[in-house]
Image 1 (spheres, rainbow, N blue to C red):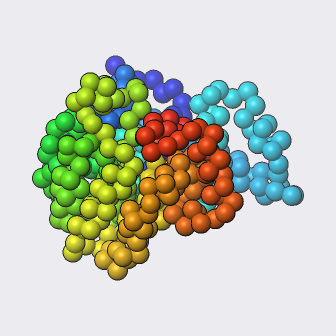
Image 2: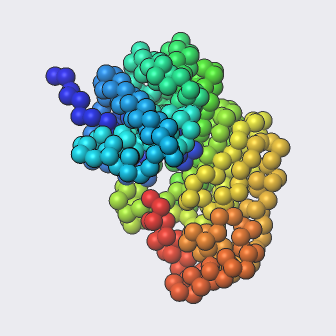
Image 3: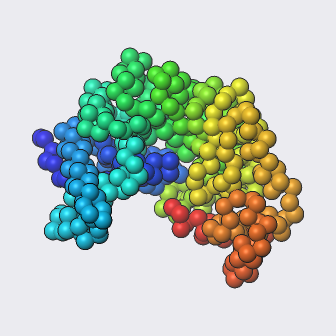
Length: 382
């Protein structure tokens, strides 16, 4: 039975690097949906949207982009009242489309992100049709990107990968998280190290930019070293364009939290995660990837640069932090987790340091309860 079109759809997530992109929902939720550290799609059914529904979404965005353009061309550039009139009386899906179009116009209309968790599971012919249509309707678009699972990418033929690249898919984000077999098995990732490598190389061979994600802490106390070393080894074999750091968080609604409660998973604190991140970075060799720390959960926002030239600069704040006295480390962790600090140098800003100290005092944070404080603060960003 054919599915009826229910209007423009918007998925729940995108990478931070796609903040200015148009979100175009091609699939709903996650086809795997078993990873114990992720609760985003739990209880939600996966489905692939019909191509004609995606086409209708694209046309809807085109309509609102044109309408917004007309308003902006009015004397004085139009105003909020004109935009309000445009959405007045419209159903929720149309209002979502209008707001998506408006955000995209404000962002320059240069990039599109295909939602949700794994657009590469779509049949290549269908994906090529969607990509071609995006480029035809919005010829100014410079980048089209998507999340993908290594398992799905590894199954796509080189010929189809080349077709997908030619149709306009220019970047793929793969949540590798770890390449250690013990870790992948425990968190039910549904993929092994070799498949990560095959998929990553396949993306690169097609001429598509590749972002690989590494998750410090995912191995817990037992497999922290393996998490760093095996992941670095896989990354070295892939040489992705981007390595994106995503520090582990364990909210109460995910399955991994139950493992923490039962003692099957012993989480490590910020200090141990920093040591693991340094081990990971120190073992990246023979690649020219860009390292990005573009997520609020990461302790150091400044750990960014291109390998190998920027290695010393990237790792310098980590080494400085590890060389600090415990009380100074504590103050930085409080300030960072409270959203006061964004980089280690902020610790030497008297005003920011004062705010961090007030926060530490107000919450009575000490070396014994810093992890509980961190867990509570992280809830705000999940």
